[in-house]
Length: 79
Image (tube, rainbow, N blue to C red; front, side):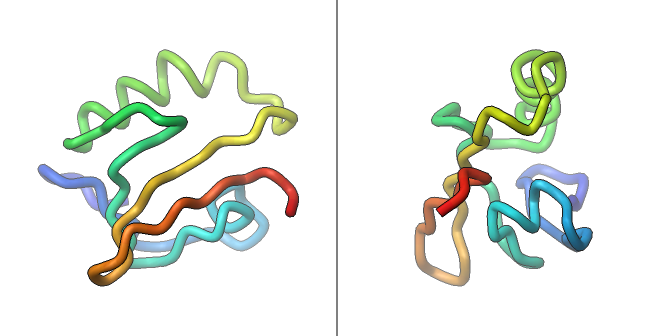
């Protein structure tokens, strides 16, 4: 992730939850689990408060990202 005003994916680690969700370098994350995260600090706060404490890989995590000029909905849920 790039630290700055907007949250942008820089790299995706193979076999990670980000890879499972389908995140790609360059994606700009707008929402995580339906919560709007307009800035990096908002995403970090949300992840620390809502995702990390219950992260056991059984609950899907959803993302709304901008890829190029298109909004794309992604999820760690198995398809």
